Image 1 (cartoon, helix red, strand yellow):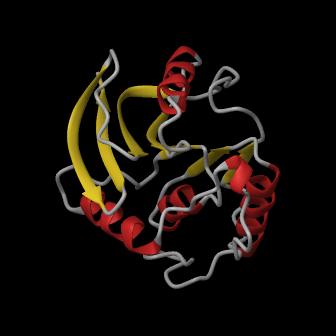
Image 2 (tube, one colour):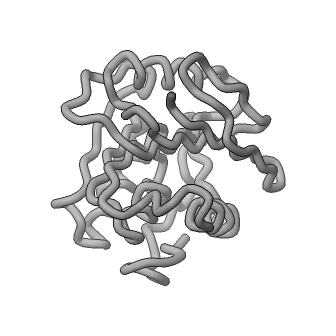
Length: 185
């Protein structure tokens, strides 16, 4: 895995190795990440990265939030309670020397603490087909993590319907993955 574009373009991220099957660690592939970020950067969503505060739920390796940092986001908060994921996120933050702009919260994404400041861009990549994405979205809303007008990027095995307070902006299929883009009202 590598950073696709921005300040850290081409930089390699920590090797996933055997991963963590029990925690459903399934990193977004470089190809899907590149396609997703091309959609986000394509003008339809303005500049979703410049100065943006990012929340990366079920962060896994942290690749999505780190890609956003590479492209100009001001801060990324990574949430994952997996032991292997926590190690990979810390390694990747160290590799990119961005500890001043990155924070790891090692806890269940469906049980978030209250936010200090809401985020404008949210990545949500839960284990597929377990209903955890909806629970994490509800927790993020209740905790004040999602700013009005925030863009939510939800990766699942099927296109997702918009929860209350959100509208679907776009939905695209990439192999076995669906990316649903939501806008907070």
